[in-house]
Structure formats: C-alpha cells, structure tokens
Length: 226
Figure 1 (spheres, helix red, strand yellow):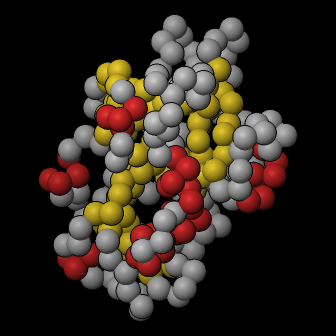
Figure 2 (cartoon, helix red, strand yellow; figure 1 turned 90 degrees about the vertical axis):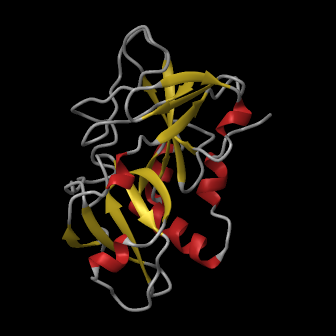
C-alpha cells in the first residue's frame, strides 16, 4: 500500500473496484478517530489512517473525487481564496497566523501574538514555519483578516513525500507542479509527508512550535527509516 496524495480545491477520496488500496494519514479530531478505529486498527487519536482505493494503473497517483466517505464525519469544508490571511486562536490565548496558498495548501508564519494583529505587512514579513495541506472547517474560530496577492516566495513548488505502509523502503518524493521520483527513506528526512491536516491539528502544531515542544502528529508522520 502507498500513501494517498491529495490535490484540488476540496480534497476527497472515493473507492474504485479492483485497484490498489492506499492509505492517507489525516490528523483529525478525537471524536472522528473513534468512528474510524473500527476500520483501521492502527489509527490513533489525532492521526487517522483511512483506507481508500486508487484508480488507474499507477500505484502512486492519489484519487480526488467529488464525493467522500468522510462527508458527515468531518462536516462541511470552508474554502478560502489563495492569498488570504488567517488569524488562528491558540489554546493558551495567543494567536498564530497563516496564509492560504494554491488549494489545498497553506503556509504558517513563525509569528505569535498575545493580542490579535491585523497588520498584513507585518505578518507577511515573518518567516514561514511550514507548508501543509489543510481542510478548513466551519466550526473552528479561525478569522479571515485580509487578502493580497501571493508573494514570489510562494511560487516555488511544495515538495512532499509518500511512503509505502508495508515496505518502508518504497518512497516517492513529489512536488506541486507534477515532478515525481522514487527515493530512499533518508532522502525524505525533513520533508512533509503527504497528509491532510484539520485545523485543530494545525493549532496544536503551531503552539508546540512556538513553545519548543515536539508535536505528536508531526513526529508520527515523519518518514520511517526502519
């Protein structure tokens, strides 16, 4: 099996008969984890392993469809225009900040404030912590605080990896412009695994980054070297 790569404005998965089963690691809410544990025993709270099927002969092309077996569990997604600035309330009362890239990717700034900041120039001047795929949901308290055209730094392809569940040596490095190649596990160190994060998982990861704590989901999704 291989990990599912996601793309498109509203990532979803669908089943196709007589095809290679794949997995997608999806950081998610605890209540959804309870619903899925009956399907995949290796799923744990915060990170879900969802079995889906890949269409066509290729073992590595993810499936993106108009419907999803996850619909009704995760609720309705919210779509933001690329270039949008997001202000993110964190559990300790502080705020983090993100930027919507070409869907479904976001970038998150290395910037944390004790009071809400709406200065787009100041926010945009901060370095980027990470870029990941995110499913935005209606129930979270993230705020859209403005929009501007994406800067040149965001024109660079985003590079990620996939790793076979059964054979850790079977890895692929790919990017958002369609380049893809086989890789050794060691080459994937430092890259983001192809995964769709929920907003609550992003909140935890941001706060962990700001406070110098390892993030459980991030650690779980790192490439396996053995």
